[in-house]
Length: 255
Ligand SMILES: NC(=O)c1ccc[n+]([C@@H]2O[C@H](COP(=O)([O-])OP(=O)(O)OC[C@H]3O[C@@H](n4cnc5c(N)ncnc54)[C@H](O)[C@@H]3O)[C@@H](O)[C@H]2O)c1
Image (cartoon, rainbow, N blue to C red; front, side):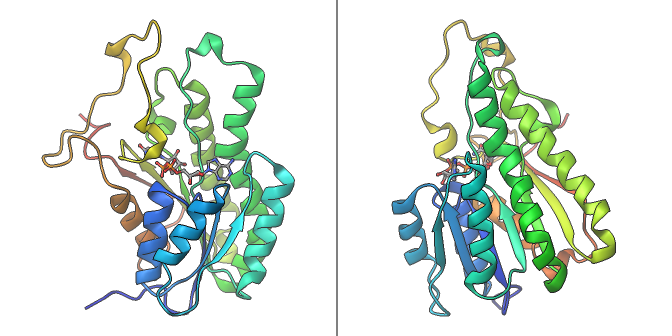
């Protein structure tokens, strides 16, 4: 029997044009959600919107730039009005940049923090009043790098650690309002974000994180593995789950 946990619900997914965001759009659509899909990649958004159109109404798409505070705020405002209600917000848009720590300049540091952390805080601020009305929830896609750190991406790890702390703080602050906030920490997942990474000059390979060891998944997980976690945390099945951090990494960070 197909699970329809999002029937009558509206979900906003950022970074929806590819990878984990695209898989989340497909999964929540299959489970009955009306979708608002946001990304900076307009062509990718149109493609996902076509694929995720379940016949219950085409997804509403919004092009925005998470590096820009004004663009992010107006995206969130439009997402609330698009279908007249918002039940689930998936803060997923992100960038991964690799560099020796000594080479990370102020602009690069600020961009990584803005896209991976500050923009999600802005979206949470804008959508909390609506989530209060609908008894909704927010799921943020952090990273195992935010728990354990990662060599050659200190700015990324710092942003993801901040995102986890943000989610836990909001879970407590808005618990009396019935809004749930949770984070997912994916390990290695096969998407565009890391596909083109060539070794850096003077890279010490022994410092690079180890692979997942779970049989059948040693090359990394699939975006659908993370989408399944998003669908769980965003649904009624997780009604008693708030302030939690779900690690999905095929044993990459344990043992
Ligand atoms: N793939 C992995 O191994 C992995 C591991 C841990 C965490 N994550 C996290 O998962 C999330 C999704 O990443 P993914 O792996 O699907 O990669 P991806 O590159 O396929 O998707 C990221 C999406 O974010 C969008 N985006 C990037 N910058 C943006 C901006 N300034 N404004 C609006 N949209 C923007 C991109 O256009 C893209 O559609 C990210 O937050 C990433 O940090 C990924």
